Image (cartoon, rainbow, N blue to C red; front, side, top):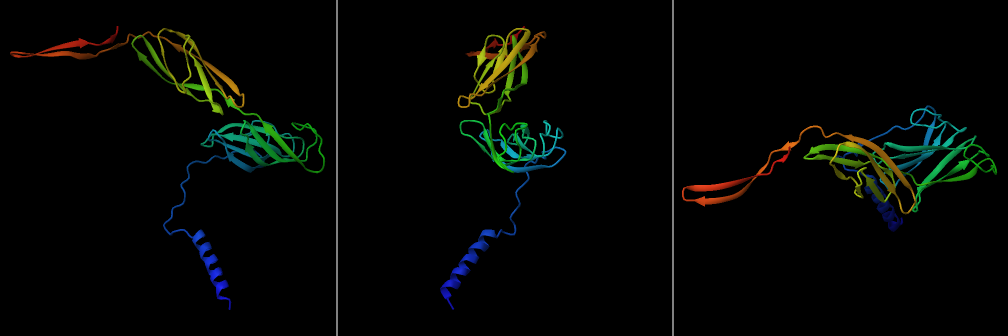
Amino acid sequence: MNLEKNEDVKTILLCLALTFWLPANAQAPALEWQNTIGGSASDNLRSVIQTSDGGYLLGGESQSGTSGDKSEASLGGSDFWIVKTSESGAIEWENTIGGSLNDQVTSVIEISTGGFLVGGYSASGISGDKTESGLGSFDYWIVKLDSICEAFFEVSSITPDAGGWWVTFENGSKGVYDSQAWSFGDGDVSLEENPDHFFTEDGTYLICIEIGDSTTGCFDTYCEKIVLTITDTVCYAFFEVFSITPDASGWWVAFENGSEGV
């Protein structure tokens, strides 16, 4: 009997047992979120990556037409279906790509200079999105998608103050970008992510945010009007103790009125 060989086998078995053994009191991971994504026919996911903005890119094929989460018609057979989600799984955009026959995704990657590369195989000839003839029953098909940046913002709060309004803006832009610039319609600008701005007069203001990425060259602008009407009288009571002076019979205290408004 080869004792050394038997010991080696025992060692391997022990390592495998330690690898797959879990303590009896180990807890299963908690479910944080989930999302069902699809159309009315067959949709198959083939590849998932996390993107540089913290979200996810999903690649697969779909036989669904415009239905459910799918906003574009089928191009024939099965099509590439690319879905971009936020970090919590909410759909940000989706794209149907294909020809008249079966086209199937096998892999997706994010490109360091911006955008995505989708790889798979195709039985389609020149049709739909496919601009080259088929070379056989199935061919490699690779598709480059541009980087996407979409500007958007919301007004998160409007607070009256003496002589005007403080308005807080929340940047809700999507995609990859490395700069943002705000204009508030009153001549002032800001480069902050989520700026607070003080408006001193009644009026309708066109608020715009422009985002851009210096690497990919993706730029987008979103504008929205807000109406501010300063009709209510605003007044705030406030005072400070200006001085305290001892006297023979007590203390003299001087108060300073710091109230604001009308």
